[in-house]
Structure formats: C-alpha cells, structure tokens
Length: 364
Image (tube, rainbow, N blue to C red; front, side, top):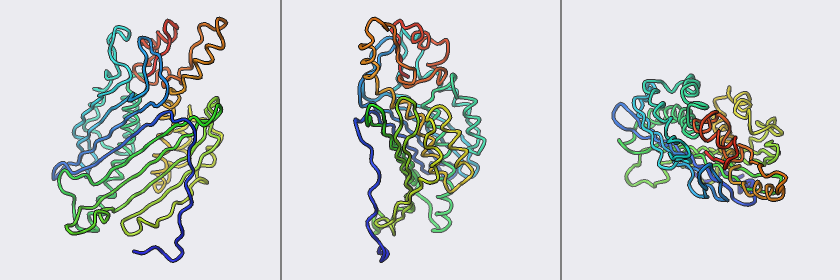
C-alpha cells in the first residue's frame, strides 16, 4: 500500500546524551510447543559499561552482570502454567566464604511453586507474595512480571489473527516477541538520561513465494525518553512516543506523541513509588497497556544504572580524606536496597558487611 498523499517524513525522535553507563535487555519470545501447549522464554541481561563496584570480597568490573532466563510451558486456552525452568548463567554474587556459601541463585526454586497457576489479573500479586523482597531475586521477579503481562497479550493477538486469516504457526516457530531495552547515560553532573524502548513484534506464518516482510502482522513500539535529577532521583523530563505498523504501512506509519498522558509524573521520584503512580495513571486503560509495561521497567533498571556511577563516590571519598575515612556509598549506588532481594536481606552476610564497613560495598 503506498503512503497517503499527505505523507511526510516523521519528525526526529528525542535522543539521550552523555557517557553510556548501563544497558538492560529484557525479551519474551513465544512459540507453539505442541497441539495443546505454547512455550515462552524470557531473558534478562544487564550490561554495565562504566566503572566497577567493590563488593565485600571482590571487585565487580564492567561487563555482563546478570544473565537469567525463565521458560514457561503454558496452556493458551486457560493461561495455566504447566512447567517452569530457570537458568542463571551470570549472577552478581556467587557463593564464597565471604557470602557464607550463599549466592543469587538460592531463591530461584521458589518460582517452581507457581506451576498450576494462571496468568490472570491476580497472578502478579501471587508472584510478589511468593518471590518479592527479601525472599526472592529482584531480576527474576522483574522478568516474570513482564512475562505475566506479555503472554495474555500475545495470546489475544495470535488468537485474533489466526481466526481472521485461518492459519496457525508451525510447531516450534516463534510468532511473537516482546523486547524491552533500557539505556542509561550520564548527561552531566546533575542529570542522567534514560531511554526505554519496548517493541512487540507479531508474525504470521510465512507463505511460500511471499516477501518476508509480509509476515509482519503487527509491530507495536513505545519509546520513553527521560532525564533524572541524579541527586533527588526525580524526573525532570519525560517524553513518550508510540507507533503501530503492519506490513502494509511499515514505511510510513507515524509516531504519536503520548507525553501528555504521563505529564503528571514529571517532578515525581523514580524510587520509591514509581510503579504505584504508573498503575494509578494508566492501569485502567487496556489500550495503554504497552505504555504501562514500558514504564514499569523504569525503576528496576534505573537501580542498575546508578551502580555504574561509582566514580563519583570514589572522588568524594578522596576529597573527604581522613575526615570521613569510613564514608560508604548509598545502597542505591550499588544497585540494591535493603530487603530488595534475598542477597540484600537484613541480617544477611552482604548486608552485615556493608553496614559494618569492613570492606563495605556490595552490588547485587
């Protein structure tokens, strides 16, 4: 389909500036596993690009900090989870004498108790009770929350397409993927820039002799551009763009400015309370669910971005000299919060080491 006569090039999207600090990648891919079941795989990867973080027993350099995955076999008719598999090749804290044999993988088996549960509106609460805070892993929790929101949408889109076009994907063929990428940059001594890019890609079965792009049933993108006061953790700029495309308008579909929807968030803190404010603002509107899901990934990733800013802490400590020899970074500068996960739980070996200041700084 040719572009409309009024077609003009889309205006340039906002950009982020400054020193690259951290990238978080979250993806959810869906395929048919059998005649009855579908399979979803979710992955989270954290890539630190700047500096290093001293822990209670080692130095954590830049590079891959977290690499974790969750696989679900589920019934698309009932959204019932039948099997769960967890893999954590890279974790921030491995078992050692300093951690008294504990590591970030320890809580993961708790997630297996969710077998038999349905991915319905009540699932997020069950997940939080089972795996939130000091009894879980915040990164697996964030990934599972994204999967729980993504899979009902994937089922709805594919069911509608299948009925409309009278076709189903081949077994083992991926037909839906959601990707979320969060990039943090140090814009200045006062500001951090963060961009969150969410994209849902829904594909129909490939027809012999057709162009590959004709597989595109839907591309739905949401891009958030934010600047944050790095001292107060408040939003000083927040812009959102949204675009939907299919194979017919892939070259000329325009971005829509959604900034007005979230204007009330400007001036608010990223942590704590971001998720609650976003749910209150957008939670009742199904059509804005991708925007909601985009913004819900903000706060968890922002904590990881702050851990790449340790240079400021080292500089301040050196300036303080002997006057503040025991100065420690804020816990949020290390990418964690007290009781935010099992390894950062109150009374745990990492929390005790950080509080005592023996070597004092740990990242999870």
